[in-house]
Length: 114
Length: 114
Image (cartoon, rainbow over all chains, first blue to last red; front, side):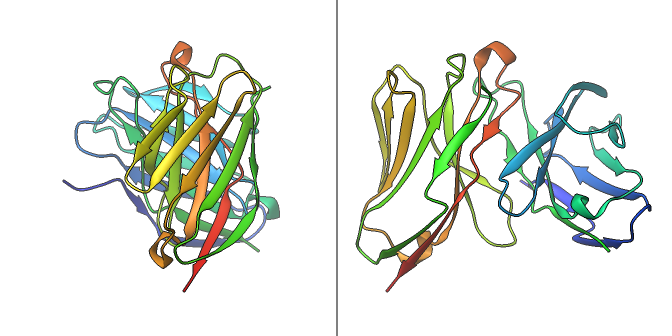
């Protein structure tokens, strides 16, 4: 069974630009989560999508947004990039059939803002 | 109140020794505590998890100890091996939220030296 995939692996942008990150969940999983992993700060919850709807978001400004497509894949958009947006962005997926809702993570996209 | 505090930030253990990582939380609504293991270039993967109705859970060389009254839990890695070298994250989540929002600790980078 294929795991969670993310693209691109690395992304280099300059301040003020927009970045688009993509995630494909495990087949059968309807929920997709986005996390930001900045150096020394652990994983910070960004967004949760389920069945095409945004269900919850963390304490991030509105320039962090995304969407989930009918095939449950997801896109994270970061507008007006700032230097502090440089981080590893992790996507995870889960299935409602698991009562503990284990989240399976992808390898991440390393975003560097210059 | 949503924080999970994790220590130490880094840990060096000799092969065969015991690695101990500690976490503390404030939110009494948390009722599921997973530990994740992350190797460089990979996303975090679920290692072991515990609910507060038990004080200890063991899976192979990995043991979680849980102290509900102190709101603390810890991961013990017995007979630590170089292959255990990774970053470990404790986490906490709540069934009230359907386990959707996971709060992570800041991570512990473990190095096991031969």
